[in-house]
Image: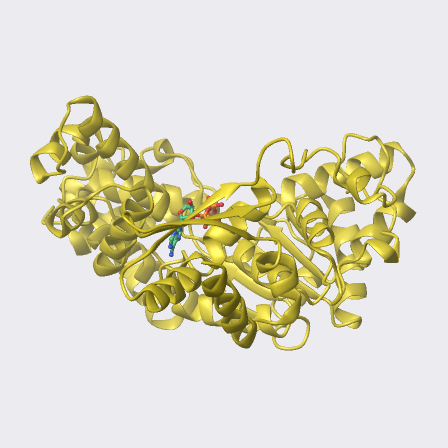
Length: 476
Ligand SMILES: Nc1ncnc2c1ncn2[C@@H]1O[C@H](COP(=O)(O)OP(=O)(O)OP(=O)(O)O)[C@@H](O)[C@H]1O
């Protein structure tokens, strides 16, 4: 086994940068090879490394072991003996390193973020502990990687751009602006970028922050009169991942601070990645100078996944969860649940819990029908006017009730007309029937809406794109 391990490390050294070898591979210790079961046990010094190695290198190690032992080998990772090398307490990484504290602006320490002492940066000669510390500070979720991000037509451009940025931060597309509806993988993708950059050991200072958190950081800086520290912290990052920027709407001081951070970072070729539920020009109550900055790099949409991609996602997630899912079952779920990946994940959880509870080892379409009764009755494959109203209301972030109401502000009237147009296009209902379902409106109102949206669609690319996304969501 020792011979195998030596060879394994040598082979990995040919493929991986030396920082990764010293951060992740060298700390591993081969424990035993079980001849009968063909299982190789390897220990990792702490939980963080164990998770990381399992996620990122298990496959490579398993392939090498399979080659060496000339039969399929399973590699099992374990925590090193509890007493010998305890898993790190996440609350005090700096103390372990003996480095000075570097709280983010939202840390409970009550201090606004001072800039990091240079010594705690993760540089190319960094120790594994420094990589781990950088990870803690970055607020990245190690579960969200490129590896487990399923790609299809709906997200291939976004993924390609994300990979490019992860490889060349600050130089290719700055900012990278990713937008799309709820649960389509925007957050996943930006964590994947951060995780990839962190694992590359380039020494980048990375921070993931949800827009809401950034707003509350600004408020705290206000209260503590600590804007200088706040600025120093954010301006010192190499990669800032900021999620759901639409939450900046109407927060003027936040927008101002972000504008400074943006300018400072881009000028120094530091990478900024932004996600949003809509494209920059459509963002409401955001300063126009910010909007033009957002659009100055690369703006890419993530669209709802098409049927085959939804099936692939289900199969992949089922496999990860250790659930055996026949393809026809995946097709059944994917055909009925169309809007986003989060919904698919929920369905998978429901189905497997149901099967476990009822002692059904094999997932069948019948099990799914029972387990997902509630969900399926809402989206039973038929496109109904109710489905359209709900989908359009979700898309434009208005209340479903506004579809029937008499209110006429433009931000409601336009989505309502879009929904009427889609109702005419995608259902068999007549104009008067549609009018009835929209709060008893006259059929001429519906006709006007249908004509207006059809005409606007042919002239406005953005509206056409929105309609395309809505049609795809509704048709599946
Ligand atoms: N292509 C994909 N492959 C695998 N998992 C995915 C994919 N897209 C999304 N997911 C998973 O679906 C869930 C929702 O994705 P995520 O949170 O990234 O969505 P989002 O676009 O950021 O949504 P929101 O706008 O609500 O924040 C996550 O668990 C994510 O891992």
